[in-house]
Image (tube, rainbow, N blue to C red; front, side, top):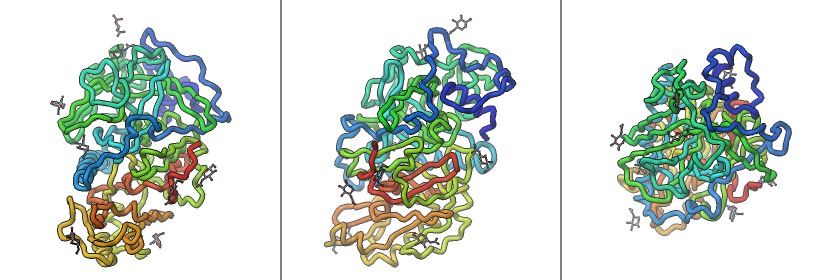
Length: 492
Ligand SMILES: *[C@@H]1O[C@H](CO)[C@@H](O)[C@H](O)[C@H]1NC(C)=O
Ligand SMILES: *[C@@H]1O[C@H](CO)[C@@H](O)[C@H](O)[C@H]1NC(C)=O
Ligand SMILES: *[C@@H]1O[C@H](CO)[C@@H](O)[C@H](O)[C@H]1NC(C)=O
Ligand SMILES: *[C@@H]1O[C@H](CO)[C@@H](O)[C@H](O)[C@H]1NC(C)=O
Ligand SMILES: *[C@@H]1O[C@H](CO)[C@@H](O)[C@H](O)[C@H]1NC(C)=O
Ligand SMILES: *[C@@H]1O[C@H](CO)[C@@H](O)[C@H](O)[C@H]1NC(C)=O
Ligand SMILES: *[C@@H]1O[C@H](CO)[C@@H](O)[C@H](O)[C@H]1NC(C)=O
Ligand SMILES: *[C@@H]1O[C@H](CO)[C@@H](O)[C@H](O)[C@H]1NC(C)=O
Ligand SMILES: *[C@@H]1O[C@H](CO)[C@@H](O)[C@H](O)[C@H]1NC(C)=O
């Protein structure tokens, strides 16, 4: 989907850091849309530091700084409360995802999208990433989401914002902020790629010469909705040797109002960082300057309050990848990272699941912003049947909170883990062996439950990615993974 023109315009937006060259024909296609035409009052920053070959070819971000309020110890929710929250959030998002996916499969879309459970920002459920932007710098934490593209923050002036942990981003305090106008090519590209957005200011999807701000409205499957403006800013990245690298003209969304009927508590993230494959995502905007590769290693929820999960962009993404196995990314024209699931195995034995069950929906998605793995219902049924036959404890009739559970009364977690079989996902060319902690969740009193739910398409959620080193090798269109103690992985 990403034509060279698209790539060219996006890289132009990133100006100095891209290595893509644009021909004059491409640039002149719409003279008014030169993204260097900023609204008056904004300043183009001087050239960025020379990026190629420098020590900053790798950058790191922390998944929550150790002193940040969002890093408070996980709450004391009961299993039932936690499971219901995770279940609902995964299911809601899945509804959105499914409709996107169907459109992609029907050939009508396949374009970058926003989608996320915006309230699922409790630290146990999603991982939030530190981001710094503006001149002078303002710092935020935002959900690290491989299932969406746009990076957005709640901004001043905010008509209706969700509670968040940090002060709102204030464009008026930043000399490097610039609103996009309808005439900016990036706005036109964005609006044309996101047909679900309405753009009250910029009804024309191309050729507009209006200087009105590039605003958007979006509603989510559960009825919550957001309005905001597209803008560009200088973001500050920290290289693995500690140097700060400025990337000017980073495109992001400034949310001015967000409405949701769902109950929200305080201590929420400030926005989202879109890590998808679309043209506007964080890694797509960084592009080849950072080798088009990133990795993360998510610590267990129990370690979140004290340990950092590193997320690395650039060659350092491979620093802890010994023993990694790769599986191809199936589509590069969509937000989602789809890979080919061939089989599910229990104790090394593949279950009898027709391969069409996995193939029919375009592949299985790796999604960091999604908590509990969704499996195609037929595959989940086969897995539960095989586990029921292999687990030497009574199954709890009717389950708990919709999950399939077993009663290992009298045993410790370590005893249980030693006596249940290993579940593996066999992807094309790579086996993903789940630990006990990735497969099951404790439901108290030696009851434990399979922490997966039915859903289509299948999605590997972050619960199943914890203590796994995951590499998104976009340059070679492959995803790699290897089990790791993420608490031990050096984050530089
Ligand atoms: C997100 O998930 C939480 C937890 O299940 C739920 O309370 C909330 O309503 C969901 N919000 C959206 C926007 O889907
Ligand atoms: C950018 O847009 C926001 C919201 O529309 C507005 O409040 C702000 O004044 C604009 N900033 C500039 C520099 O035009
Ligand atoms: C847009 O252009 C019109 C006409 O040149 C001008 O009057 C107006 O102030 C401009 N608006 C902004 C937001 O720059
Ligand atoms: C946005 O969501 C709120 C709360 O659910 C709702 O009252 C409002 O009508 C929605 N706005 C639009 C334009 O759909
Ligand atoms: C991770 O990478 C660092 C830097 O290369 C290395 O020192 C460390 O031993 C690696 N750790 C593991 C668990 O591979
Ligand atoms: C996307 O995939 C196609 C087919 O595999 C390939 O030819 C193309 O180069 C890829 N594009 C990018 C940007 O990786
Ligand atoms: C699936 O992965 C497991 C774990 O690595 C392995 O033992 C099994 O042989 C694999 N099965 C298939 C069909 O590839
Ligand atoms: C688990 O088994 C124990 C001992 O048999 C029993 O007391 C307890 O009620 C069971 N729990 C559930 C949830 O079935
Ligand atoms: C993982 O590493 C942490 C920190 O070094 C350590 O405390 C923990 O015991 C390790 N966990 C396992 C399962 O080895």
